[in-house]
Length: 399
Image 1: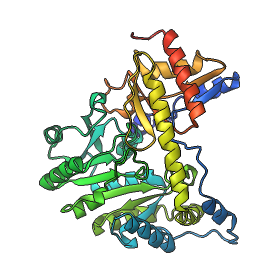
Image 2: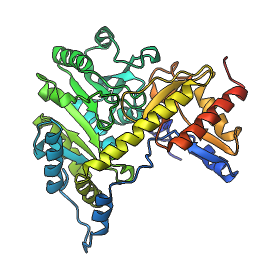
Image 3: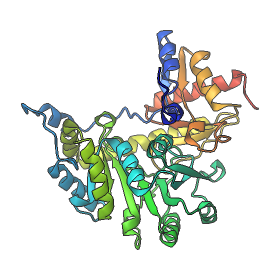
Image 4: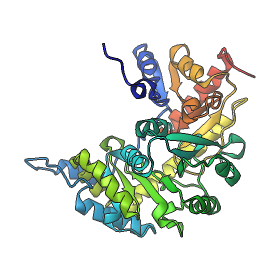
């Protein structure tokens, strides 16, 4: 039998999904599993999007333009203009999820062997995308002690080498829920300008900012317009994870033209997904108000419940719908698997995402897990109760 490639062998497993077989086995045993491991909202998709798909009666589902259906791109550009990001439809490409947009950005902005600086912890799949693109992630450590604020600029500069070509951020952040301030973004702008780097920004959670905080897009940082690439997605904004549709946005024509060549190689974004996403842009303001209020309530619910548990520290996230939690445990991978294999409370247990997969530094995250507050408050409280009871009997408890 031929050998697999090194890339195929060493692609990292997803910390979000790698424990799925254990969850499935727990369900077969009759255990109810609370899924806090993945950002799959239970919020309904906008009715206008669902109805638009139902109304499709095309006899042939044709390829669209490789950059996406023009009417959708124009409407999407209008959405961005409406939130203060002044672009045209020619400044964006429709992608197969935000994931493809990230991979495209890494591929067109960097050569194999180049380096991208990323504050850690970061979205776990960045590791896989970087490996696929042949790019090396250089992590810049942020700490739970200051709620995962942007690391000092000296740390970024200390890690810059002749192979450094970009900085990648997620704002608001997955997995921490941290929201970067204007001051922090201006500091990044200055470094990007000084060293002539690309600034890649994953902004898929921009609608979810709490406590009066406002999201600031890198597209509005003056003086680095040609250095900036924004990644976006409909998955979280409209609770449409399954349509797999994202966007790559840049005012740099060379970036867009190079990414378009990659888009042409895969021919077209999915047609029905674009129909749904274009219709979703007509969702009423009340839809977002209700969704925002629900997530804000869930955030308070789970953070307060977790912080009442002995030895647990959960920062209050400023955005997105995740938080990274420190637990009194020896190994988060072991704990998460044990929760599914050996523990239940009142016939229930919890599926968590071990934080080790959100760090590039292998010695970090062993006492942390990511929690996605995408369930109703009653389920979040039940999940917190399970975690509290589990920590009382877990063999690797460190208290």
